[in-house]
Length: 298
Image (cartoon, rainbow, N blue to C red; front, side, top):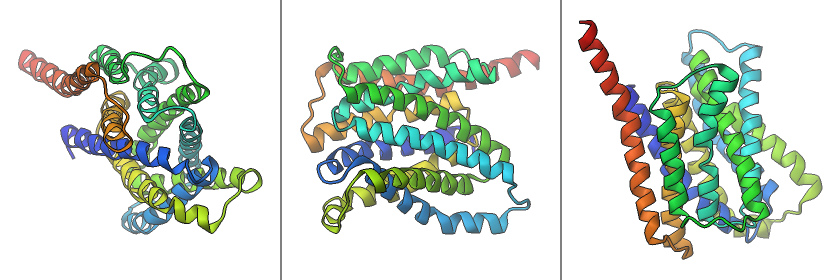
């Protein structure tokens, strides 16, 4: 897979996640956060399991204990991001949630530099700022009265950044994206359900009322999109992945307006244009730089 194809895969994952914001928001009318997250990722784990098993059958080397522990670490970060985002949606809008979740586009390169001492291509820094600006404009440029849900979503963005970085590291070192996906889903589900059982109530009526949202987010937004993420990240860098994945805010805002009646202000369309420009810059500038370097050396 080429880097361009990988980035397009990540863009598809972002579009699916954008629809997930709507499903996650409407589900909170019927089901509580820990049960929703637990059931969502249980379904995702079961959906990915047979493919992970086939992947293991074809693998030339088997995963060791350290590899599985690494995958569990990704699952811990996934749980942190999923549950803070889900609880946050109780007191914030889909538009605000998608904007604040998009902060990971800034957190990823910062963590990469501070913790990993990995310095991305210079275009990542202005691109990160442009993406954040675009997402902010999509929210109407008004986040003056932050709710508890907004603060939780900022915390969620940090966990997503950690998950993106760890997923990129471990899928590259192991070459086992489906095993990683299964392990992180299972870890997240077990953690969420361990909190849900003693603290929240559940019943068949609740499950039936939120079944459509659970199935969409479990099978499509989790099972499919997260697999697309870890596959795409094998062939691109974490900072570039963060830029493309941040476009979920664009899709989330559009679908929030279309399905939930949330209004995208005129300035929001300027934000959309900035985000698409950012993705083009991230894709084209490194490639043009490499071609120029080759022409100079030759």
